Image (cartoon, rainbow, N blue to C red):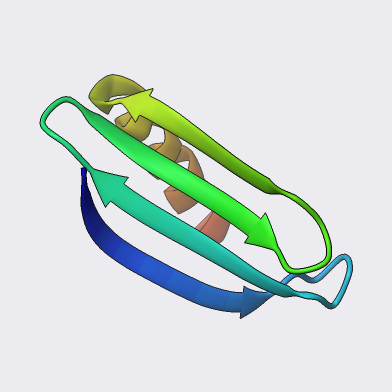
Amino acid sequence: MEHVATIHCTDLNSDDEALAIVRAGDSAVALALSVRDGGDLEVVLPIDACNELIAALQRAVSPEP
C-alpha cells in the first residue's frame, strides 16, 4: 500500500496529540488512527466502504439545513 496522507491534530476529547494515516492499494484503503497516550487502530476497508465513509464524513461536516 502507498502512503497517501498523514493528518496531525488534537483529539478534542482528551486534548492529546492525534494522527490519522491513510494508505491506499489497488482494491482497499487503510485508515490508521492514533492518540499519543492512547492506542492505535488500523482498519483496511474495501473501496465501497471507503466511499460510504467519505459520504458520511461529508454529511457530518456539511449537514443539510
